[in-house]
Length: 413
Image (cartoon, rainbow, N blue to C red; front, top):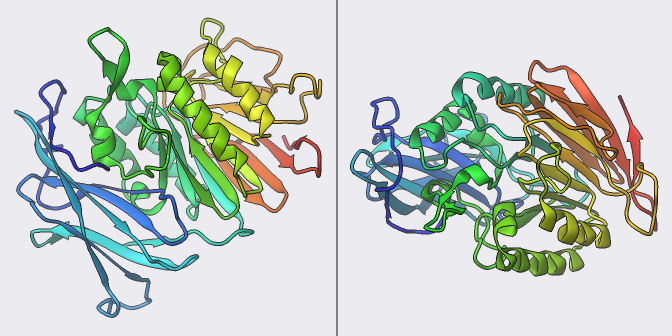
């Protein structure tokens, strides 16, 4: 979250009493940090009359006496508003924490506080990593996406992180839609670190008609690592959790210009060349191999796929195509089968659906189905499960590390 004054003359705002910012904190979101074992990042919203805000954190206790060793951190405040919306976003990063430790935090200002939220820092290398992965939410977020994220949380309440693979809303400039996103996820956003991946719908048109302008909401309301490629800060970044490297790319920038692709390509090549982790998972919005015949993300397919092969990336998590497809595309010149190598997944969690065109690389597909994914990584095994929004197991597989070889995929359903 960069400290900037955001004036929203070009942004559509919902100035209803239900969505208007108040003195009491709302839209409280916990995000991944560059060092999740020793730090936590929190962002929230208030009315713009709140000029100074703070976050408080303490090791979780079984009783109500929290005064001992309470740490207070002053927030970075970003005024955010226009003619019909007067708000401020506040961001804190709690540092110097202990790994694998339960903490309680709250945020506030002007005498108004949120409730206390209980969270846990990441553990150490070798601990099991638990991940929730969500494809596009995008439309009818409050009415229909809400049940997907809530079902996912019920099945994995102790997840280390939740990846949102782009198009969190339909129109990134509409505050009302962001209000639905935070309403639907409610306290879940506040207790599971979110790894937000930017999609095309978080952008609006520039003077040339290209969707290159990132919504001001993004950097105001999310506090994400600033360790990515230059020029795409907080939309391209990485974090290491318990022996797994998680990387977010900005595929909108990759698709739009060669410069946007170059910056992320060379940054990613270097990052993967100096990767001490056993497992690597990369998430971006536009698929390398589309689920729809009329779509083709050529730069990702022709340029980035060989990079994934070179560094033997384990798992690619994508969105955009509003259907479900997953499979392995063989590494050219190395293997011909589709049971070894990088697993590519496209998924959708919201109600907007597209037709799917079956391709040879697809091992499992679904249309007109809202889904979420639960991933567990322990030792040499990655277990990937896809569930429908009613909690039914739809798809499952294991990736198993093989010394000196590509991963082996074992079908589980």
